Image 1 (cartoon, rainbow, N blue to C red):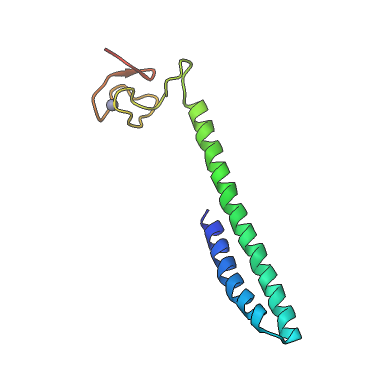
Image 2: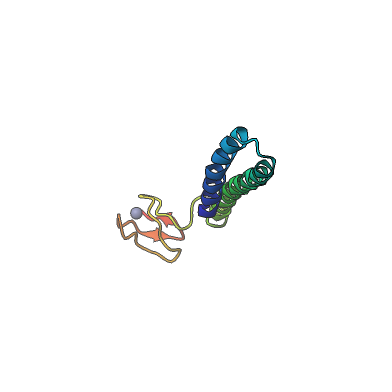
Length: 109
Ligand SMILES: [Zn+2]
């Protein structure tokens, strides 16, 4: 995620001045070099954006997977207090926040 932002930042940061110099410069050797630099920055930006997109998709998949693996047969979350919603472990019997007695992820009256 952070790598994606850095790559995108560097890519855009290098692309803009390269594009400005490219439009002002008439020197053929300098132009070729700047064109390569500009394209490199384009690739860097694209790679950065792909990194961000990939990490967002990965995070979503992890969240979805977490929800599936941490949900009981009746659709109740297994490791969340049914009363106050605080995160608890599966073996917790009394919620540390609201004091609800929990048995197998269900609230006991
Ligand atoms: Zn609670």
